[in-house]
Image 1 (cartoon, one colour):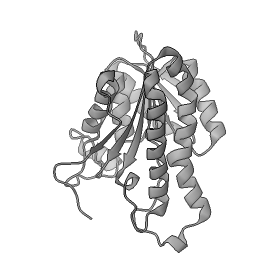
Image 2 (tube, helix red, strand yellow; image 1 turned 180 degrees about the vertical axis):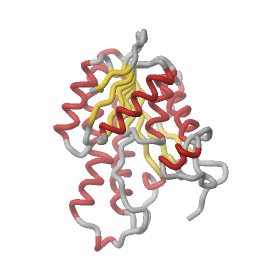
Image 3 (cartoon, rainbow, N blue to C red; image 1 turned 60 degrees about the vertical axis):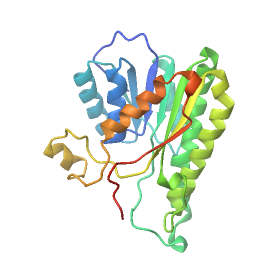
Length: 254
C-alpha cells in the first residue's frame, strides 16, 4: 500500500476497484479533485503506484495504491483490510473487468476456466467487495456503490458468452442491492457504458499512445464519464438513479 501527498479531507474514503489508464483513473482523479482520500485498486501494483503519484501530485490529494485480484476472495479480503484501515469507505466504484479478445469466440471453443474467470471478476468480485463495505455504510446510514456495466449487461451477443454472463450477473447484483440497501441510506447504481472508451479529450499524443488509443471516432471521454459517476454520488436521496446508460453522440458501429 502506498500513500502519496497529504490531505485535510474529513470525508470518507473513495475506493475505486479496477483502475486502468482510462475510466478507472479518471474516476479516481475526479473524486480526489472533490476532496476525497482515494484508494485505487488493481492487479498491476507498479502501474497503480504511478497513477497514485500522478493523481496525488495533480490534485494535491491523498491516494493509496493497493493490489487486488478480484477473482480471488482472499485477495479481496486482504486488500480491503488495507482500505478499511484508512477509514470509512463512503464510495465504492467497482470497475473491474477480465481482459478478453474482442473478436467473437465460438461457444464450443470457450474453455471452462476462462468462462469461470470472467464470471469471477465481473460479478463474484463485485459481491465480495460490496460485502466488505456495506456493514459500515448501513451503520452510518449513508454510502454509494457504483457498478460499471456495458452493452453486454443487457443484451446477449453471439460470440461473447463470457462477457455477457458476467455482466448480466453484475446487473442483477446491482438491482438486488439497491432494493435491499437503498432504504437504509446506501445509493446503489449500475452504469452501462455503451461505447468505446478512448483517452481523455485533452490527452497528449504520448498519453494516447500509452493507453493504446490514437483517437477513435465516436470514442467516449473517460473524464466526461467520470463526471457522471460523481453526479450519481451526490444525487439527492429523494431522486436516486438506479441505472443509467451512457453513449457518445456519434456512436461507433462495428
